[in-house]
Length: 445
Ligand SMILES: Cc1cc2nc3c(=O)[nH]c(=O)nc-3n(C[C@H](O)[C@H](O)[C@H](O)COP(=O)(O)OP(=O)(O)OC[C@H]3O[C@@H](n4cnc5c(N)ncnc54)[C@H](O)[C@@H]3O)c2cc1C
Image (cartoon, rainbow, N blue to C red):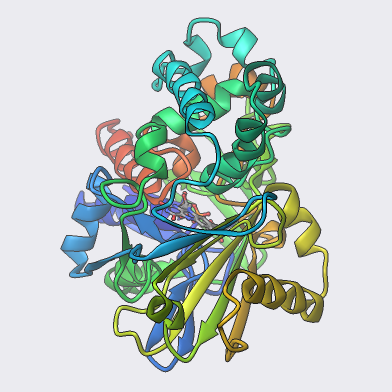
């Protein structure tokens, strides 16, 4: 069986690896001149890499951890010792732990309301969740305006959603917010470092996962070839790029839904898998220092700010301590604004903000901005966001094969949607789907 995989991110390369192991003849076609998609590494000092895309994982990310072990990659704990900095509008504060200096009761009530919501979600089919049509008609912003009465929870809610989903609450339906949080293991797990989804990083950078997978797949991967069209008939599937055509028995499209939608299918897709999906908006900023200098002052590097651009910062220094790296997250509405600025202005804003949060730091020796808002072949990040009506209209079609075309990608995963774990799981799922479907070669599927 000849399988053409479109997209060399975690989903596509996991699928390709499983399919090759199952005896299929696999080709992978990737638009960028690199593999990895939404995982990407930047070398900030010789041999020291930081994650410009996905970084964090936890123990429940079982398929990702298994893959790391198989590839001989190790994890390193996310550093979170020392006090945190908060700039939440009541004067700056330095406090132990990550809990913000806001009403514990109000935030506790907010998390309880979110937990109640997430418990009702049908992960396998969110559109069949009780009350789905109502939950899918209301935005997270409208929900918060109705349910969160305390000013502290009103202040914290958009920061929380920005950090978890890179979402502006006005952009996502309540159904999508609740599905995302539930699929990621619940609010506590997703939000936690120790014991949670942000506990570890890949030692040396998450980009190595796809690079290792690609090294094993060798010349089956074609870089720099965006797929523009996919034609199929009862005998074969033809995948068209600007430089030619590939013929196979089956195709796996492992790209985000809106980018998949931009491919010209013949016959046309019977139903759309995306129309109004908005996109998550994240810009990652890396400020590099001669070492993790904040640690000497008893600070963890973690901060939360109500005003941007750096809504949160975290210590992402390489484990060898060769340099210190503060990663700043600019998400949601802030990301739209920040990504429209020129680089010197971005640098000026980010450096000034970091200096305000950590006044004893010298100016950074390195500065990197990764703007995922305008990445042509990601179309936003961390993942697709579903606005009002999207789950009900498109959800049932996200994973349904279009004859010889099957779908993968983190957005097709019922578990850990939007995360690396979801991408890996979708790759395994699609490969099993194809290997057990028994395509009749040269005949009708
Ligand atoms: C800033 C940021 C932070 C994140 N943080 C985390 C985190 O801490 N933990 C976590 O688990 N996840 C995180 N994520 C999410 C995680 O990166 C994704 O869930 C995961 O990498 C998605 O993998 P994928 O294979 O589904 O899609 P992608 O990685 O998007 O792969 C799709 C591939 O398809 C290619 N492609 C697109 N269109 C075409 C075309 N027409 N023809 C050919 N190729 C095409 C793309 O170039 C890409 O390589 C983050 C993402 C970002 C951007």
